[in-house]
Length: 281
Image 1 (cartoon, rainbow, N blue to C red):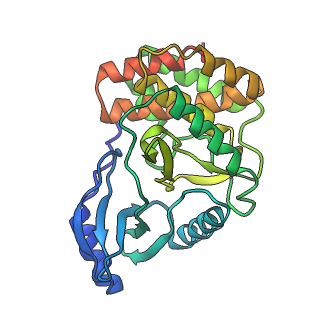
Image 2: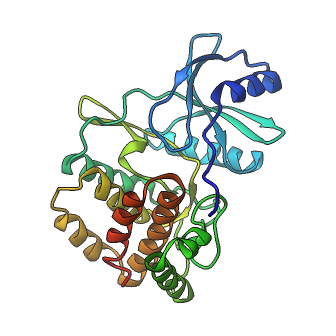
């Protein structure tokens, strides 16, 4: 079975970043949430930041920083990249620490606020690459086909269906919108009932802002397990072309089932399979 993604050793990363950049950052504490990890740090002048290990090359992360700066100027609550440190085994990223906290309550009002925010992603990423859906080959540390192939008959059937979707058209996103590939309720910050930040921009690309609606629907499956989400499913069906919805659903099914096999429990894998199969039979 493919190995899980390693958790971040934040203090070691901080030492590497300080050595490479001379930034003099101070460790404040681990940042809650997330599957791989982040840490809160402080600059010598008292500014707070969030330290992560960036995915991609230094050039790619600089491009991400430029796109997010344009989004900031357009009024989106996204973080400024304060430092990119080129390290022997990757890039250390220090981002602005935005106000607010992850939402304590996830409900329809929060989902609707997040859906409304995606309107502001329109046309913001003409120069970014289009992210792969990875339906015909494994992704770089996620969307691994091997996990589903080896797990059981049910996941193998799902993988066969994912391959079928990958061979159909459309096989990729289209458009010039800014795409946050992991747009879920754990990646927003709120204060007094308002969204104050959208974080975790490691997954960024050019394509269709409506992809975020499918990502958020998968998140709602686990955050609101007892809620009636008929209204959300009707929204997807009324907003997205059926072939496009099938494409996005196949990607999220692959992503969530693979990740649960490698990082979570068999019951979590069953939970994701139940959702995946509602549109992947």
